[in-house]
Every structure is written in structure tokens, then in C-alpha cells.
Image (cartoon, rainbow, N blue to C red; front, side, top):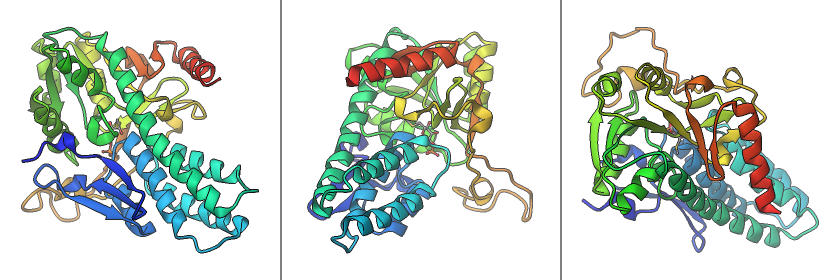
Length: 359
Ligand code: MRU
């Protein structure tokens, strides 16, 4: 089997004007690269989790918007912008929780709108460059998060992670896995416990796959085993990703994260949220204001099983994300440093640093 880390999670074929992704629903069995250029197939790829993980969704949406913009059939800038807005809104409706989706689409659209006096050809060129820049930034951001996170662990530590916040959820390194990859590169010995992550098994299918491909010591556990490995002293820190961090530090991440954080608090284990600033939404005041995606019942009752595992007609509740309360979080690791409680103050400071670096 090829090493999954050699493949690009998301790519733009600038010649053919196609969005190129690994179909993550086929992993770990098959590494299938798919090429997308229709609006419906890009929307489906995001909704069906062929491409998933907040940063990767953002990059795919930006590249997808550019690909679709290339087939808007007009030379009139105002007509072009009106069409682009419709496509942006359509792609934005594919998943509600990961803020990177709307963040990347807004960034692309605002750029196009700021060029209202330019030709369509010039706007298309700018959109292509912007989509490529969003991807390069993601790689640099993940590396910076990795460096900050690395300072929080030492050789011999056990780290627990939930879902997949790895390379497959970003464009390289991942967020929660970045400190682990950097530790491994520098010869440190870190043992990772990967929750399998019901119902879509991102931990089993993706995290344990990519970490073992990299030669990292990873042990797969069922979600209901996390408290046990913590109680046994096998875990010194929890690193997870996020889909949206509110201004007060409350964090939406894959369903089960808040249960992990609650157990970690019981055993005195720090929980770190690895968060690119593109995933921090200062316009959302707290966790209550975050829209949580609900997904089809079949993901719980039959998906991945040979036979349905629940009685026909049983009521199913399938929220894809949960909110970890800010008081369960030891630190929010961004590319500009680590924010600590009180988060309403420290996250503002992180954005001030970001602004000052841009000047
Ligand atoms: O439903 P998914 O697989 O898109 O959920 C992914 C997660 O919850 C990740 O932890 C999060 O997006 C951060 S990825 C760096």
C-alpha cells in the first residue's frame, strides 16, 4: 500500500481547471483520487465527507469556487459577480459547522468583488492565486501550530486524539497531529491513542492510517475506552482539532470531544485545541450560537456494518459535532501562539498579533 502522506489531500489542477481530492470515504482500503468540476459534485464531495476536516474543507471550497468560476459564461463583470455569489452560497450550504467553509468562500468572493472595475479574465487570475495562497497558508499555519504544540509534550508521553485532525483534514501536518509529526521528526517517542470516532470512524479509518503510515506509535481504541487509558496513566495530554471556536473559547469539534474533555478533567489531563485562526469565529459569542450539523440516521444504524445493527424505525439522534466548554480547555493553540483562559481576552490578543504581522 502506498504511503497516504505522499498524496495531496486537496489540489488544484490549473491546466484542466479541476479540483483534485483523495476520496476519503474509500480510505483506508483504497487510495482513490477524484477530479471534480461540476457544482453538484463539489457540493456532494463536501457533504459526503469525501473531503473533510475544517481546513481541508476551506481549501477545497476555495479551489472549487475558482473551478466553477471558470465556467461562468460571460465577459461582463457584474453578471460574473452575480453568478459567483450564487455559486458561493450554494457551496456554503454543504456543511454548517466548520467555519473554514464560509471563511474561505467569503475571502474568495470579497476579493472578486473588490475587483468590480476589472475584467473577468483578471478576476479569474486573482481567484486562482488566492485559492493557491489559502492552501500554502494552511501548510504554514499547521507547521506553526505544531511548533507551539511540541513545547507542551516530552518524549515518552502518551497523547490522545479524537476524530482526524491530521494531514487528511488539512493540506499537510494536520493541526492536532502536527506536534506529533514534528516530535517524530525530531526523534522523540510519542505514543498516540486514537479514538475510533463513531459514527463515521475518522479515527479508525484516517488517523490510525496516516499516523501508522508515518511510522508513529499509534493505538486505536473505541471511543468508550478513552477514560480507561486516562485512568491507567497512559495519556499525558489530549490534542484535538476544531470546526469552530467561539469568541469565549467554547469549541465545536467532532461529536465525542466534549466527553473526552470531561474525562480528561477528571484525571487532571490537559486538553489542547489546535485551532488555525481561520477556525476561530469572533462573531460567534459562545457555544450555544454554533450551529451543529445533524446527519442521517443510517450513519448510526447501518453504515460500515454488513447488516443493519438497529431495529427498523428506531429513533436516532446523530449530531456530528459537540461543544466543549471553555473551562475544560487548557489552551487553544493557534499559529500565533497559545491562548489561555480567559479566552474572550486571549483570543482577541491572538487576532491583534495576527493584524500586527500583516501590516
Ligand atoms: O466531520 P468531519 O470529519 O469533517 O469532522 C472533522 C473534525 O471534527 C476535525 O476534528 C476538525 O475539522 C479539525 S480538522 C484539523
